[in-house]
Amino acid sequence: MGVGAPPTPPASSSGNDQAPPRAETGLVFRHPQAAHQVRLGEVTVAYHLQRASRRSIGMVVGADGLSVRAPRWVSHGEIEQVLREKADWICRKLADQHRRAQRQAQARIDWQEGATVPVLGESVILVLDERVDGAVLHEDAQALPGVARKTLHLGLPQQASGAQIRDAVNAWLQRKALELFQDRVRHFAGQLGVQVRRVQLSSARTRWGSASADGSIRLHWRLVHFGPAIVDYVVAHELAHLREMNHSPRFWDVVASVLPDYHQARRALRHVVMPD
Image (cartoon, rainbow, N blue to C red; front, side, top):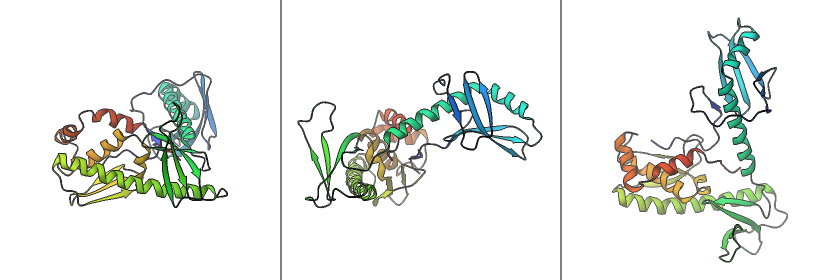
């Protein structure tokens, strides 16, 4: 069992999801494989159409835009009538994906000296410093408000490539993540009265963490980017599975016994954007 939120943005949304904020007017959303477009109120939507052996018209809003699958015998007019009937949902979902893409772009890391990397919810500035061995974190307690207080000095030359910088930072992040996870696992395992056999890092695409009945815990190393409350929630969640291998009310009672306000971190985890 494990926390099933994917560490990458979801690829699609279905028509029964809870509605996000309404789309802005005047926007144009274009699928890269679009061959058709329709005006939905104030929004223009260029969509990808696939003909398929099916009885009804289906649609998916994903990172690329709107994809429509329709029976071969349905006319374009009928397809666009259905799209207009679903206009509010389509436009909201497209706007939601657009905002997510903007957040993802803002989170993208430019792997060079002076770039910032989020570590436990704080910005850390990268410094290339051949005098150090490996990577060393420095903290400036006198930094001005709003200015990053921490710098990560990497033992790399000024001409180091982006790939070298990224690899050095990620190696340091993984070491820090394992150290942090082991500490938090010890903390919560004692409170929950469970035995943990092994703590390992994960880079799974579909789970932030997992727990096995033999006492093995796996946690996604990139959780180290996010605030301590999120890390603690995922750790407590996985350890609770060592007592309840399910998501029953009893399971959530176990989580609440060590994290009474876990709902806040759980909601926050659903909306995190992975730095790239």
